Amino acid sequence: MSAHVYTLEKSYALSIGDSFKTLEKDPDVIKQLLRDTRSDGTRRSYEKDLRDFFNYSTEKEPARDTVLEFLHLEQRQAVALVLQFKGYLINERKLAENTVNRKLAAIKSMVAMGRRLGVCGYALNDVKAEKVQAYRDTSGIEASEYAKVLALIDRATLKGKRDYAILRLLWDNALRRNEVCALDVGDFNSQAGTLTIYGKGTGTQQTVIELTRKTVEALSDWIVASKKTDPDQVYEPMFGSLAYRKGDIEDRLIGESIRRLVVKLCKQAGISKRMSPHRVRHSSITTALDHSNGNYRKVQNLSRHANIDNIQKYDDNRQRQKQQREISDVLADLV
Image (cartoon, rainbow, N blue to C red; front, side, top):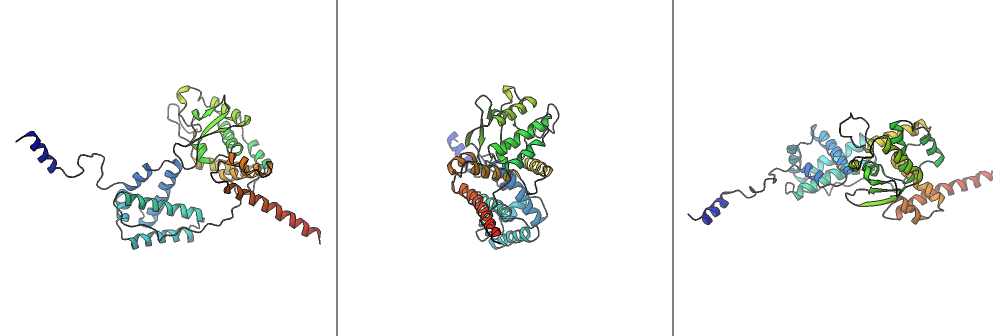
């Protein structure tokens, strides 16, 4: 038998796909979904939201077989399960519309990945998102109130230096918390006074922003105090948890830690409004509109909104409050 014939017969004996060692007969759909997602924040949300769904529906963690069993259901069965979960989120957990929609989007993304991998034959088009109210309170707090928050930080301590630098970025540059979390040491250029950030929901898209003198000083102070001045440390997280031992790899600070920091300090400062890192961003943008006479383009450079209509919403809310107060004062003076 010739070598050519032998090779041909051997190839016929192989099952299709045997040569591809990474090909899975029963794919891990959630694992592939997370691999296919660039944003760290989105990956964490997917993991949390899908865990919530499977814990509710099966009282189990979302293992590969459980996920495949769900994806192999008939469409009517899958839709019924997701609608039951949606009702639970709305009526029992009393979650906000945006949160409910985010969890539904995670399930739909998993189903879409299952369809792409050929292990799911249905879609969830009949599961509708909750209608979100168009008006949002974007006013935030006054600069004088935020100054009280900054004044509470003990900048003589290592934690205080870190927290002060974070809070300056949230206010001075209106950064989103995930943008702060994603920063590496090498993203900061102290000589140029700039910072490279990775925008909302992106993987490699970069924006270089100018920093204020106070923010440059705060970041420089933190980097020196945390001993991150070595050139080999440029890829280390800018902000870590501080809860690590010498020689361990530092954990990157997560968005929830920044949220807790903001909430705690704002309460200590006597601020009654419900605060979050995004509310600080609201405050920064609204204050910028106040001090630029409503210059949309200038403030858009601060907020980095892709659509200037978003800035108009901030300004509309700002004007609405001022105009309401003015007309109320007129009415009060008449009686």
